[in-house]
Image (cartoon, rainbow, N blue to C red; front, side):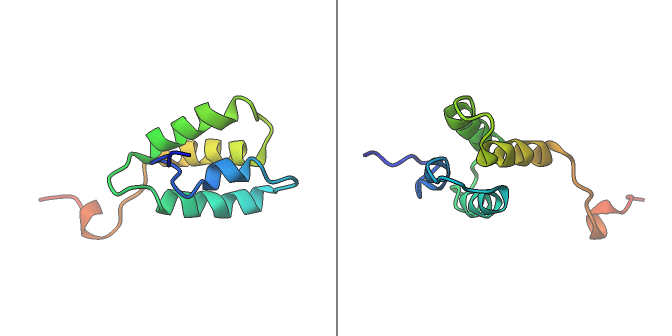
Length: 89
């Protein structure tokens, strides 16, 4: 089987195969998956691919819920702290 560059550890794929998996476990798997994405990979785009691939057939699965949450939180602007948030004179 060919390796998927967006899920090379097959974490997302396997999470959908685990019977009785709960949201807390899916969040842990999601974090591991997100941290293992190739450097420079657009996380939003990768989440969208995973949702297209698995979410449509599994709309009530906890991983689908976690992926949607990740998509929403990645889209929200974050407050920057430190010198980057200070107004320039």
